[in-house]
Image 1 (cartoon, rainbow, N blue to C red):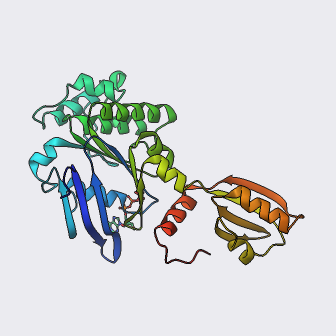
Image 2: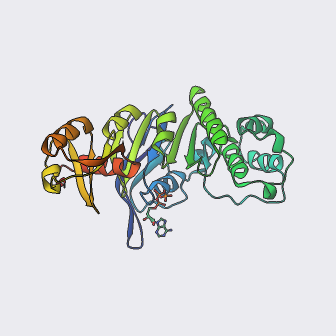
Image 3: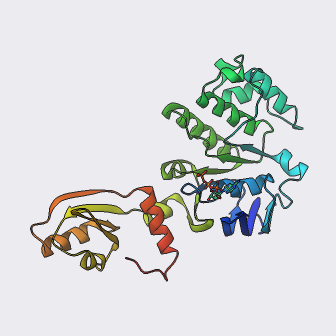
Length: 302
Ligand code: ATP
């Protein structure tokens, strides 16, 4: 394992039958950081977390947490996990579920602290089965922290939460970090990674395609999408400096670029009759595409 890292995935390949979910993935988790693992559906995020939790068997490569096998009991006592699914007893109250779970750890946080951290004080006496989806998710967050873990894994922690619940979970994650804890969170949202993470690893098709601070990642994904009707041909536009991609979409030409002003200036000089112009921020999918291509200099930009 890399020196000083809390957890590492080294050259990890993981298959489900014919599906290659992870393809030689390398990832390090450093003490005290919030690492966001960002990627589109099916990128391999949940698989990577499953290996770090020891809930999936390593097939190829090496996975270490606290320098040991991820499933070892001493490792499990020092980390917490918030998963997307729960098997909690519906008939126990929120507080009873937390007590039950806490009893598993040698030095758990008090249930009252957990309730406060997850904003669940008012719901302590409610049966788990009677909670809304977002409330259940807050219980899952509280469970992840029950053992006062040094390292906590949060798998899409805010999916399905309303804006207020999302913001309060964000501030709890920031508090954990201030308290010196390490967190790994998976998310689809660049905005969430940006708000919370010290470092972002972008995963695409089972590989890390970009890694850096949020501002490094954002500067690499600061693309704009230009949409217009023009007589200039697609191939001519595609070869302009700063154009990542140009595509015909019905009557329109769609252009992805990191330099929208330059591209527009050139286009208008070439075609003063250019019309129906729209410039928008490129979506996350476009950002991923840019990152994937940036990671693969062999590929022709078309
Ligand atoms: P999402 O954002 O949708 O949760 P993810 O990044 O967490 O996606 P994974 O769940 O790790 O991605 O899945 C990676 C790939 O492995 C996908 O192609 C998925 O269909 C496949 N996969 C995951 N679990 C299984 C399974 N149990 N059996 C077969 N294929 C699976």
